[in-house]
Length: 445
Image 1 (cartoon, helix red, strand yellow):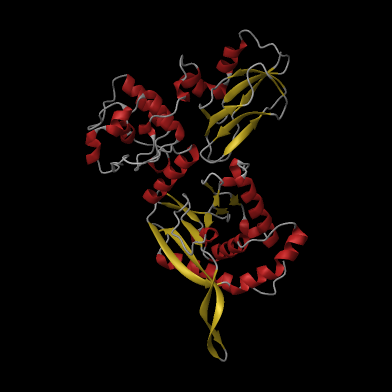
Image 2: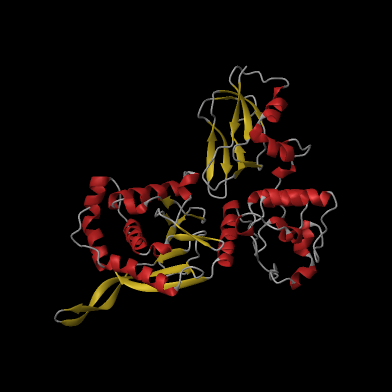
């Protein structure tokens, strides 16, 4: 009777682990090839895992809430019949090379407490960012916030890796590690101890008197919060503004939108027009298309534009248009509409929200005229486009200056002042405005 291991799939270059949200099949149930067996979540996006073979789900190797490394066996499927083997499950787990690292720490544990929610202390403390796996291990092993902060990180930008925290836990069990000075010990006490008020990163006390409703953040909101705090701590933000006269662009869209939708079956919005201008400007100023790694600057050859998209839940996600500079206006329109629609339906693939080199956010869709966006790390710049409004403006003509009604909008760009100075940041945003202002009214689509 043949058995097949269903493994945690690879979900993108930078995704190394995922959390099991919900099993859709129970042990002993029949499954078809390509039928969805479970739902998973990464720090990027939620996804479904289909069966790689038809047969019987013999064993689920992890529980809902467990954090599992990519490539690890998560279930056993028997393709030879409905009867599960009497003693083969343990052998299958033991013989799986991919499952060994997790099995030693999680599966073989008498009580797989890794499935429980991490303790409050394991969240990012405001000065360092911790991955969901590190937070889970810290909560499971009773590592206090002070101890977690004191662990030297060997990951990118000094982050604590799984290897770092497991080594710390092992040394602590062997009596080779002592609690750092000022650490009260237990996780919850670290947050609640009165002495914490004297710490530089201590949070102000919140009064709960009066009519107050306490709402727990969902998983995505916690990830967004951690990412935003990390970005502000990583990059010194500077924001530049320009006002652009986009009258030609507005008139052109009004002129062609019906014919465009009839021919292409897609509605043309302003977003692809903005992305087109940004991609052109990046070609003129390639040092905006970079990231920072220590003391090194990584110049990205591909122009991958992320577009911040609001979800029905109120959260935010940033799908990425890869190689945006290689797409014509029709291609950009189709890509923008497709990614935005599937983002709102929670149907994006992990690869579709990775690899961005520059981000645009449309605050004008909420009636705002400008904004000061936070950089989407590890990028170094992000642009906010404001609402387009009719305003009186000075029009220069060969016969002299006149006052006319024009369609005006503000562009604002936040950039990382470690590597982008005011000259580059200001010149770039001005170039984007120039491309929008010089839009050809007679352009064919």
